[in-house]
Length: 131
Image (cartoon, rainbow, N blue to C red):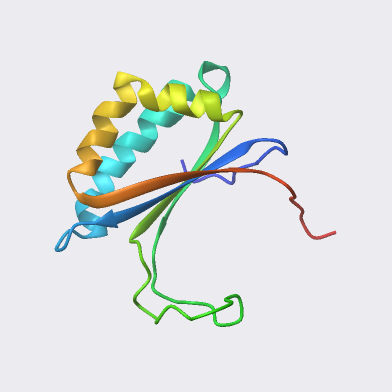
């Protein structure tokens, strides 16, 4: 469950930002997120649906002045609470998994805690590790 992941070149990455409702904490959604992530891992992994790996991040509020261009976002005022990053063999496989009732049930439950979620897709252009 907490093992390192390998991301093969040529995969797609889906970046889902989650804005929780006022008064809802990360702790309030941890079980729901865990159940949802387990459904993805167990149902759509490997040859079953194209899921390669995933990660969940909590917004910690720090903002990199060195890595930002333009008007800075004030520290602690970042526009989302959580990020789910998933890697898939194809965008089509991602979409098929998310249209499936097994996933939709868990995602819909997570949605009851959220003001909004937005999932953006990216194609990998480069990756590397230190020599």
